[in-house]
Length: 212
Length: 153
Image 1 (cartoon, each protein chain N blue to C red):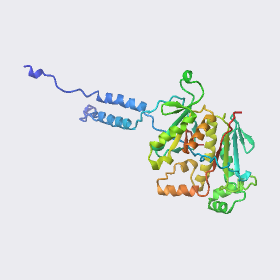
Image 2 (tube, rainbow over the protein chains, first blue to last red):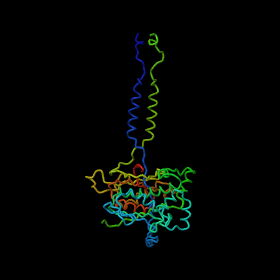
Image 3 (cartoon, one colour):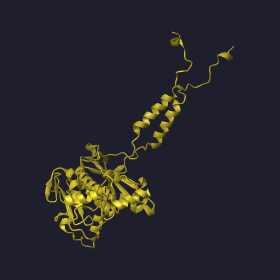
């Protein structure tokens, strides 16, 4: 009887898992989970050609000057600096100096937690540093020959100093402050409380046109 | 002795019938999350490291500018070049590129366009600041220095 010997019409599916595994491994290897992170900046608006460039009216003590030359050497407040990572602390004590705070400056000072007040009385109150956080400006000027790596490092340090200040105001660390989700009303409130009165005043000067 | 001789009736096989289904689920997950690269990057891209990074809020508002030494340095030379989409451009063509990108967006969102600068660490600031000047001219003022997360000290 031929009927009995007819082969079964089944596809063997024992190796299905293996095939799926192969595909899985392919996609695992090709996946690059999007990592679009970076240091956000807002460029100044285009200068109006009919207007003369604005004059600097701020007192020199309110401007924290960082210069970088084409050999990647730093000049911070007219003193050479070798370790870029010292900038964070320097900028922080510059922002939180309260040399001679104005009305709003006093208000900001009163809103700070006790730990920051003691930090200020220890490190701050210098005559030759910023009046209060509202007027403090960090100015960074890079040469055309400065490496991009150093530029990002300096910006990172200055941003870190500001985030330290913002975070400490509401009892968070700098990285916890960065992770605040502004879509969540509670966290947005915290964010605004931290930023209130202290602008992130980072000024990027235009580099010289001529390479030294 | 009888104790040891006793045979258990429970089967010791793990049922593997559902294994393909599990694997397929994983497969679909990765297939969906995979973004195939749209542009061929023609320049070297070793991004700088930084700790204080913020995330991009809305991807649809982001355009990318790549700057770095060309990978095919025998063809294009060793000087850092600017790449947008699939081609190299000169500095003065950036305004045009930004306007093209802005045209793709809704009118209400045009001012919120964010330029993500993917710059190689080996580049110098000269070319970057040239690009920034052009972006100011094109009124695309929100920029992001794309970088890799380093460990915060």
